[in-house]
Image 1: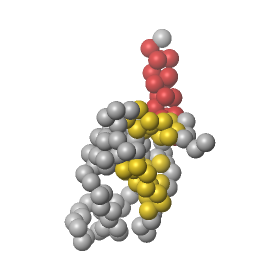
Image 2 (image 1 turned 45 degrees about the vertical axis):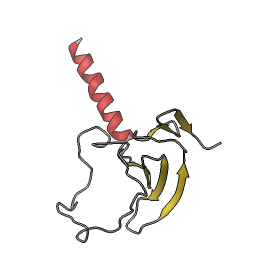
Image 3 (image 1 turned 120 degrees about the vertical axis):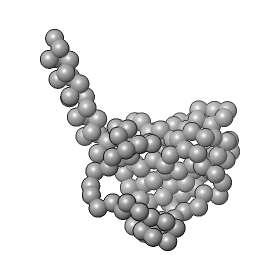
Image 4 (image 1 turned 135 degrees about the horizontal axis):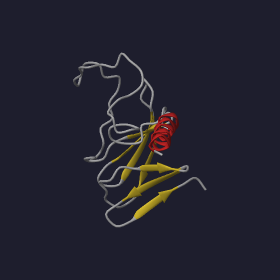
Length: 127
């Protein structure tokens, strides 16, 4: 019985790694391990060193950015959400205003984006 349980856990872990290999859905990464696939990442940086581009949020942001596919999502305390291209060249794809304050990160599931503001829980979807 214990062998079956261990095998089920291993399959579950493998499926999670396979599903999120390209996405970084929240703080500490797909599995919460603080590790990314790949190599040769910079180990030092500053405002002028090893920075390809920088985007200043118009107001403080407390939540983690989310990488989904080739898009990077960030939201600030005012509820302004920014969609950027995750690429070496800076590209702001969209700015969206919820009109409500938030400190929560965005969550992604089933093609929808979920955001919790101080007053509401939002489900954002393509109609």
